[in-house]
Image 1: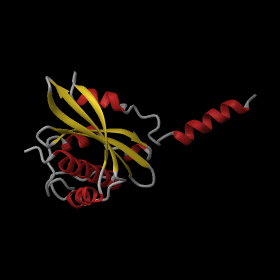
Image 2: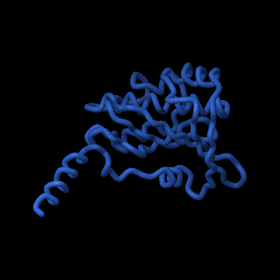
Image 3: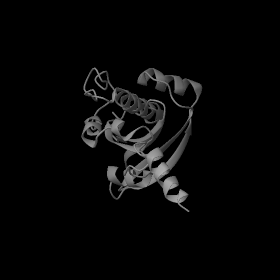
Image 4: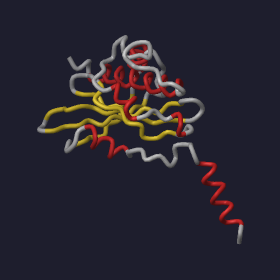
Length: 178
Protein backbone atom coordinates (compact mmCIF):
# COMPACT_ATOMS: atom_id res chain seq x y z
CA UNK A 1 0.00 0.00 0.00
CA UNK A 2 2.80 2.45 0.82
CA UNK A 3 4.51 1.61 -2.48
CA UNK A 4 2.09 3.67 -4.65
CA UNK A 5 3.23 7.12 -3.32
CA UNK A 6 6.85 6.03 -3.82
CA UNK A 7 6.12 5.05 -7.43
CA UNK A 8 4.45 8.43 -8.02
CA UNK A 9 7.43 10.24 -6.50
CA UNK A 10 9.81 8.21 -8.68
CA UNK A 11 7.82 9.15 -11.79
CA UNK A 12 7.89 12.84 -10.83
CA UNK A 13 11.64 12.71 -10.27
CA UNK A 14 12.21 10.75 -13.47
CA UNK A 15 10.30 13.20 -15.64
CA UNK A 16 11.22 16.40 -13.78
CA UNK A 17 13.27 18.64 -16.00
CA UNK A 18 12.78 16.56 -19.14
CA UNK A 19 10.40 19.00 -20.75
CA UNK A 20 7.58 16.48 -20.63
CA UNK A 21 5.63 18.69 -18.25
CA UNK A 22 6.42 21.97 -19.99
CA UNK A 23 3.51 24.07 -21.20
CA UNK A 24 4.41 23.92 -24.87
CA UNK A 25 1.83 24.51 -27.59
CA UNK A 26 0.38 21.74 -29.72
CA UNK A 27 0.74 21.97 -33.49
CA UNK A 28 -2.80 23.43 -33.95
CA UNK A 29 -2.18 25.99 -31.17
CA UNK A 30 1.14 27.03 -32.72
CA UNK A 31 -0.47 27.37 -36.16
CA UNK A 32 -3.23 29.55 -34.69
CA UNK A 33 -0.61 31.81 -33.09
CA UNK A 34 1.16 32.29 -36.42
CA UNK A 35 -1.83 33.35 -38.52
CA UNK A 36 -4.98 33.79 -36.39
CA UNK A 37 -8.11 32.88 -38.32
CA UNK A 38 -6.26 31.40 -41.29
CA UNK A 39 -7.31 28.16 -42.94
CA UNK A 40 -4.55 25.55 -42.78
CA UNK A 41 -3.96 22.71 -45.23
CA UNK A 42 -1.59 19.88 -44.31
CA UNK A 43 0.65 18.71 -47.15
CA UNK A 44 3.16 15.91 -47.42
CA UNK A 45 6.24 16.26 -49.60
CA UNK A 46 8.48 13.46 -50.86
CA UNK A 47 11.69 15.16 -51.90
CA UNK A 48 13.73 13.90 -54.80
CA UNK A 49 17.42 13.26 -54.16
CA UNK A 50 18.39 16.48 -56.01
CA UNK A 51 15.86 18.48 -53.92
CA UNK A 52 17.19 16.98 -50.67
CA UNK A 53 20.76 17.77 -51.70
CA UNK A 54 19.75 21.34 -52.59
CA UNK A 55 18.06 21.83 -49.19
CA UNK A 56 21.12 20.50 -47.38
CA UNK A 57 23.48 22.69 -49.42
CA UNK A 58 21.40 25.83 -48.76
CA UNK A 59 20.95 25.05 -45.06
CA UNK A 60 24.42 23.76 -44.31
CA UNK A 61 22.99 20.83 -42.34
CA UNK A 62 21.45 17.43 -43.05
CA UNK A 63 17.74 16.76 -43.43
CA UNK A 64 16.15 14.13 -41.21
CA UNK A 65 14.63 12.47 -44.30
CA UNK A 66 13.04 13.01 -47.69
CA UNK A 67 9.46 12.96 -46.32
CA UNK A 68 8.51 16.41 -45.04
CA UNK A 69 5.23 17.85 -43.71
CA UNK A 70 4.05 21.41 -44.21
CA UNK A 71 0.95 23.42 -43.39
CA UNK A 72 -0.15 26.13 -45.82
CA UNK A 73 -2.03 29.09 -44.32
CA UNK A 74 -4.56 30.85 -46.51
CA UNK A 75 -6.73 33.86 -45.90
CA UNK A 76 -8.90 35.66 -48.41
CA UNK A 77 -7.84 33.15 -51.05
CA UNK A 78 -4.16 34.11 -50.73
CA UNK A 79 -1.20 32.19 -49.39
CA UNK A 80 -0.20 33.85 -46.10
CA UNK A 81 2.63 31.50 -45.20
CA UNK A 82 3.80 27.93 -44.78
CA UNK A 83 4.73 26.13 -41.57
CA UNK A 84 7.16 23.21 -41.38
CA UNK A 85 7.85 20.69 -38.63
CA UNK A 86 11.45 19.81 -37.79
CA UNK A 87 12.44 17.15 -35.28
CA UNK A 88 16.11 16.97 -34.40
CA UNK A 89 18.41 15.94 -31.58
CA UNK A 90 19.60 18.67 -29.21
CA UNK A 91 22.06 16.85 -26.99
CA UNK A 92 20.89 13.26 -26.67
CA UNK A 93 17.11 13.70 -26.86
CA UNK A 94 14.71 15.08 -29.48
CA UNK A 95 13.14 18.49 -29.91
CA UNK A 96 10.33 19.29 -32.36
CA UNK A 97 9.78 22.82 -33.60
CA UNK A 98 7.38 24.50 -35.98
CA UNK A 99 8.95 27.09 -38.28
CA UNK A 100 6.42 29.40 -39.92
CA UNK A 101 7.61 31.15 -43.06
CA UNK A 102 5.81 34.18 -44.45
CA UNK A 103 4.77 34.57 -48.08
CA UNK A 104 7.83 36.81 -48.43
CA UNK A 105 10.14 33.89 -47.54
CA UNK A 106 11.15 35.07 -44.05
CA UNK A 107 10.64 33.41 -40.70
CA UNK A 108 7.30 34.53 -39.29
CA UNK A 109 7.51 32.54 -36.07
CA UNK A 110 9.33 29.64 -34.42
CA UNK A 111 7.54 27.55 -31.80
CA UNK A 112 9.02 24.73 -29.74
CA UNK A 113 6.43 21.94 -29.65
CA UNK A 114 8.35 19.22 -27.82
CA UNK A 115 11.56 19.37 -25.80
CA UNK A 116 12.84 16.24 -24.07
CA UNK A 117 16.14 17.58 -22.70
CA UNK A 118 16.30 18.96 -19.14
CA UNK A 119 14.12 22.05 -18.77
CA UNK A 120 17.08 24.36 -18.04
CA UNK A 121 18.28 23.83 -21.64
CA UNK A 122 14.98 24.97 -23.18
CA UNK A 123 15.39 28.32 -24.95
CA UNK A 124 13.36 31.18 -23.49
CA UNK A 125 10.63 32.77 -25.61
CA UNK A 126 12.54 36.08 -25.88
CA UNK A 127 15.58 34.28 -27.32
CA UNK A 128 13.47 32.33 -29.84
CA UNK A 129 11.76 35.55 -31.03
CA UNK A 130 15.05 36.77 -32.52
CA UNK A 131 14.41 34.41 -35.48
CA UNK A 132 11.28 36.40 -36.44
CA UNK A 133 11.69 38.23 -39.73
CA UNK A 134 14.97 36.54 -40.65
CA UNK A 135 15.65 35.31 -44.22
CA UNK A 136 17.97 32.49 -45.20
CA UNK A 137 21.32 34.23 -45.47
CA UNK A 138 24.75 34.18 -43.86
CA UNK A 139 23.50 36.32 -40.96
CA UNK A 140 21.13 33.55 -39.83
CA UNK A 141 23.82 32.00 -37.65
CA UNK A 142 25.22 32.14 -34.15
CA UNK A 143 28.14 34.12 -35.58
CA UNK A 144 25.74 36.58 -37.21
CA UNK A 145 22.32 37.91 -36.23
CA UNK A 146 21.47 35.17 -33.71
CA UNK A 147 22.81 35.75 -30.20
CA UNK A 148 24.41 32.74 -28.51
CA UNK A 149 22.44 31.12 -25.70
CA UNK A 150 24.54 31.05 -22.56
CA UNK A 151 24.51 27.63 -20.91
CA UNK A 152 22.53 26.09 -23.77
CA UNK A 153 24.91 26.11 -26.70
CA UNK A 154 23.59 22.84 -28.14
CA UNK A 155 20.01 24.14 -28.02
CA UNK A 156 21.06 27.34 -29.81
CA UNK A 157 22.85 25.37 -32.53
CA UNK A 158 19.95 22.93 -32.94
CA UNK A 159 17.34 25.70 -33.27
CA UNK A 160 19.46 27.77 -35.65
CA UNK A 161 20.23 24.76 -37.85
CA UNK A 162 16.53 23.80 -37.90
CA UNK A 163 15.46 27.34 -38.85
CA UNK A 164 17.98 27.31 -41.71
CA UNK A 165 16.79 23.85 -42.87
CA UNK A 166 13.15 24.89 -42.96
CA UNK A 167 13.92 28.13 -44.84
CA UNK A 168 15.97 26.11 -47.33
CA UNK A 169 13.15 23.56 -47.67
CA UNK A 170 10.73 26.41 -48.29
CA UNK A 171 12.98 27.85 -51.01
CA UNK A 172 13.22 24.49 -52.77
CA UNK A 173 9.47 23.78 -52.55
CA UNK A 174 8.02 27.28 -53.01
CA UNK A 175 10.76 29.49 -54.43
CA UNK A 176 12.46 32.16 -52.37
CA UNK A 177 9.34 34.30 -51.85
CA UNK A 178 10.64 37.14 -53.97
